[in-house]
Length: 529
Image (cartoon, rainbow, N blue to C red; front, side):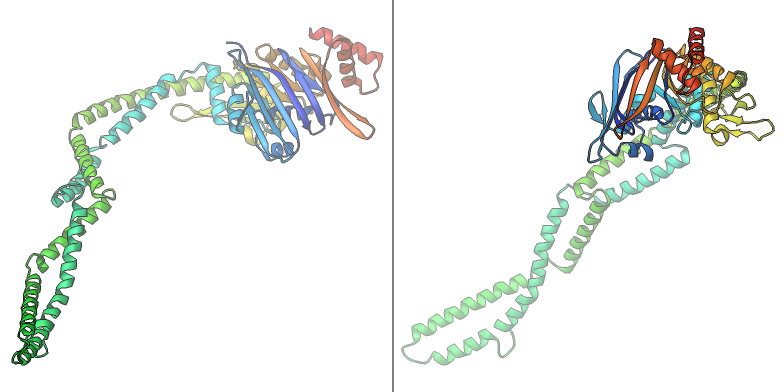
């Protein structure tokens, strides 16, 4: 599969960089320039494109800034990652020209570019990355172990779905039986029973509450009291009856009295109804309370309670019929766990052997990367050896410990270079930020050789201040800072031919170039070819 490649990097308004565009080539690409010219800013632009979101990157994007990286993935497709901020300091991320998130940029870029910086590299700080490095180096294949573990997880989940072990399943059945018994004992008829019962209760409550008023009306109209209305009315009619000429009027009054007494009879019949006796009312109120409680407990409505009843019955049937399935799952799980133990033991042995070989390979490279006094080894732990870490000691006699705790920024960068030398190329663009900081002479030549060697298997980008490293590059870019009329501008360009000789000479002798420096630069470039 072809390697990934960084084709182009663009930055505008980033620190001292007004505008810069670099088109990289295969092999080793180096960026050189005087201190403070902005070499590291260019790598900062790439970091931004890869979705970095830290306090420093947010500060870098606080003004009118635009950065973009054009990459080619291992399928030959171009991928464009971009970040920009406007005057309102709102940051916008784009992937192939479409707005996206910084996290999406990180995911898209992590399989294409790895940056090994002195301060921000996490490659050797993550146990997962160390384990991936170890497995790739030792050709450790744990796919079968991973498949077994996935199946164990699936089977365990299925077992739990069927009720788990006997005790757990019995507890679930006990709860289901209790709930079903509660619903069955209620003898729910239909989803509208509660509404119908509430309507009937409202009617009977109205009748019950109205009966007291009716009885009082009966007593006041035609009761045994002397002041009963109809009794007084009857006496009054008797007093009027003997008067001649009022016979028809008296007859009308007596008819009214008769009608009133018939109406009172109807009132008495209403008050003596037995269809709303206290016992009947109590039974209806109790039924309504039961239905309301079940509705609240099983879904919020009687219709939902009926659906829950059906679902509970299905679940009980499933659990009571799961014996055969559980037996088969238990047998499968026992076999899987036995196999998982064996596969984990194999992985542990293979990773232990790979760790010893990788430790030896890394140790053989330490002197080449200016870590001749250091020691490093890979240690593994855990039933499958997956708990891997890199143990480092910077000098003899010093205690060793995890590399993330004891290695300085420069040591970490050079250790990453040693890792790149011995590991199988993963085809990603590998970036080294000042891996040669603090070294010189013969050691610097070795670092240049190492970078060139790594670049034979992948595209490499390095920021350097050493001529012996720059001379080994396939492509060299110079970043220059110019102050004119009180304004500072920065430019970047690829140098070839005489210009490159001049830049290598400047790196050797400083701004005061000599014929000797140019001659040495030419020899270094010739030797590197």
